[in-house]
Image 1 (tube, rainbow, N blue to C red):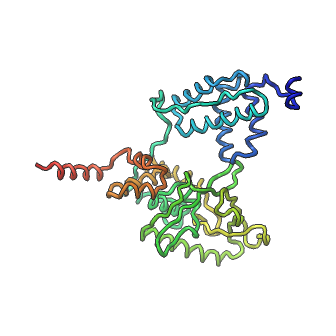
Image 2: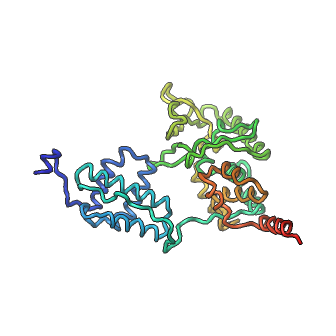
Image 3: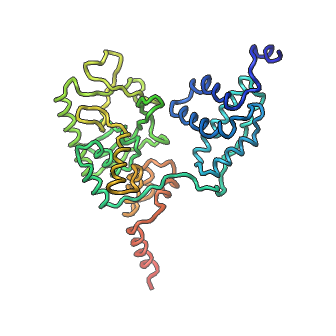
Length: 362
């Protein structure tokens, strides 16, 4: 009665944490969360929070219980970024519980992300391997020019781009005359499998230089695509985005043929680099198949991100300034760049020996 008189409705104050999360997702999360964040939260709730805390009554949750959950996840090898996401999820959900009178006070106040201690299980991270030049030659021999994987592999290897940045590149982003690439977006798969574009990871907008060989390859690819457009004419696949969203937040990516464009409904055509002969988009998922083949036939430790790691290591080998490497890769801080060189190559060791012999020569 007091609830009804004070708030105009009555909530179930005996509700379980599992049932509460279902209500929260349905009534709050879908309103203001990005689809990628929503998917991430959903996985965390279903796979971690419900098994650990779902059987509790919501009103019995305490700060100690939630803090213990974060510490347990840290000890189980989850990264700091994952823990920050879990903490944000708990804070947001408990604030909703308070706002809607399920509980009087949030148990997620002043939660701390575990740091500066050794976890029981090392932090989960996939190791990235340096790929020797002779192995890269085998990879390009297996996926030569004109295959769907050649351009993405070549760009990642020679520019150090992330997977999403590579597949988001448009011809509008490349200045072939001055041999530079503008990195200003990445492509992502949304929860409903609709492709969209957003800012680069960590908002790492940047301009990077490209070499003569890659410039020549890209010019040849541009010429090939221009000839294909003439040949396929109206059957050639084209991609458009709403003009007002082109470089502002998430961009829905529309695939249509020229003869299906409704005047005024879709505008601002973009010209993607990673396309097949008929203009259809080569998605990042192509790399899953490519990786499987490379692992089986050429290099068992291959993954796409290792191309980025290899690119950075090769620059370090020839003594390129670390700040330049950080800027080129779009790392948020220099410490991330340092971590790229978690192993030293033989070239680095030989250069180090030479420096030592020079410095401490008798």
